[in-house]
Image (tube, rainbow, N blue to C red; front, side, top):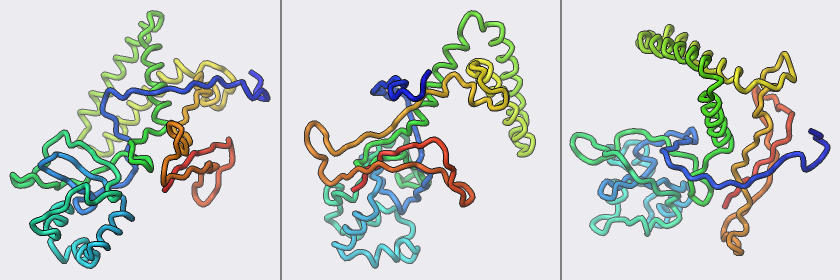
Length: 272
């Protein structure tokens, strides 16, 4: 394969239909004062903090909100309950919040406290794009494809004997994990053994290129598989997406104040 040829990569644009629950957390944990939960409609509303601040300022509720967040006023209430309390008998509708609502999430389980429908747990929202749609990173999509390919290879007839050997090892690893679940040190060792078994299966099936005896990643048959997760949004169905802007940025990995230079990776970022 000649890397100097600009067309050495084959490109495909794919649409993925999600048929199982998927959660790609953005690493942020929200408590009951940071999202709205409507128990009657069984919906959670994620907030755009800047727009929500503008809404509160327009209603002259910012000082009350500060006291609420500090636990000095109506601390027992959820944010949704606090809003309704501030609005009085008229209440506040989601439509009135407008741009302050970034995304809507259907609640599939019943959230209760002392027999009442009130949020009690912290929640980890999925990653959302600037337009409020759920975002699945390209690395997650690649991992899904990698798992599907591995599953296909494991089930091949010529790998049946190896599959039986590894299955016995996995059963032993799972049993060891269960028996040591209450011992933190031993459970970590058991988990490491389980991960080691999985790594062996991957290397045996996918590290087949034999390009580098020292670096296993260089021998991975899927090393050339790349999955993008973003595209320009200025034009949608021939029209500009009002209020959104897109820039192309170069991605750099920073660890311990050191910038890692290597393969140039570009990211498409949209904002408003």
